[in-house]
Length: 142
Image (cartoon, rainbow, N blue to C red; front, top):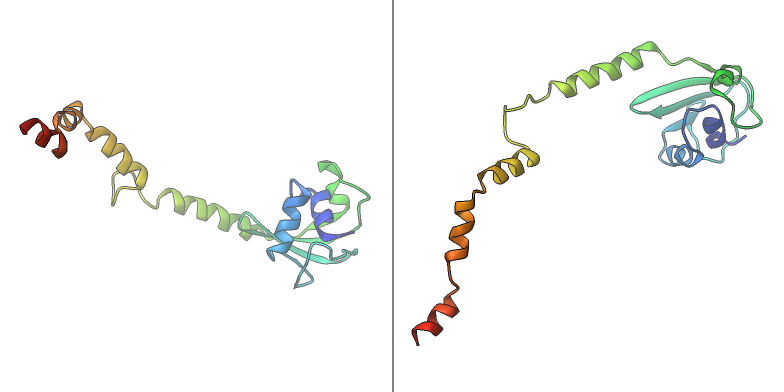
């Protein structure tokens, strides 16, 4: 069975197209070698698939005939992903949350747009409407 089809049928990727793209980008390795989407998978192969900044490690136990239900996935693969990979991902989430608190540092683009919208008052708009272009003012003086 092809590696992209295997990853899709064992529910590592939602669609086969996403699995194929992951293989093309080099996110999937079989026995330490980067795999193309058409590479065949055999029992006892070691697969490393990078998804959401986590390197999932699995061992192929058997080849499914088609996509399997979530409860039957463990018949066809053994997940050997270390727990440290998931813990590292949680730490990344926490570091992103506390990177910049609101109101500290330079404003983001969204903050700048909000400030500009707030500072746009009706008095500024009236000034622009009262100004006449240079051409019309010259014609009226002639």
